[in-house]
Image 1 (cartoon, rainbow, N blue to C red):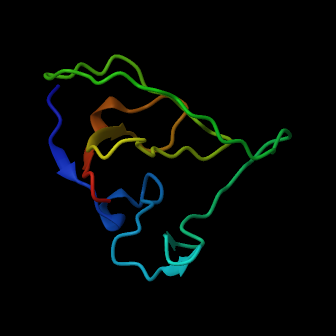
Image 2 (image 1 turned 45 degrees about the vertical axis):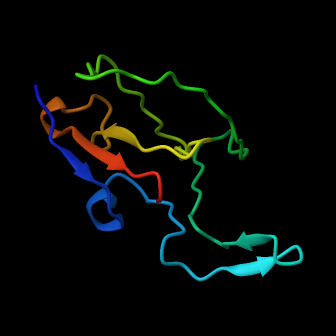
Length: 115
């Protein structure tokens, strides 16, 4: 299966979640004008009995192309976000919400380094 990689937008990614971006957003300068602050960028939803908000970091290895997708993760009770720690673009592969992903509905999005 070959996936077409689309450039991500808030509109074309909306069925899978929210695109968190500071692009074209109003900011406030804080800390003696050394920091730009952006508020309320995303709605965090946590379901289930253990609904504690957590922030975890995962350090992923850079992949080589052609890229073989041999697994998908499912997060039915919480949100997940991808925030690169370096100025880099990356690709995210997603499927509509389902207990078992429909591989015919996979979509790939390129997130540019300036998002």
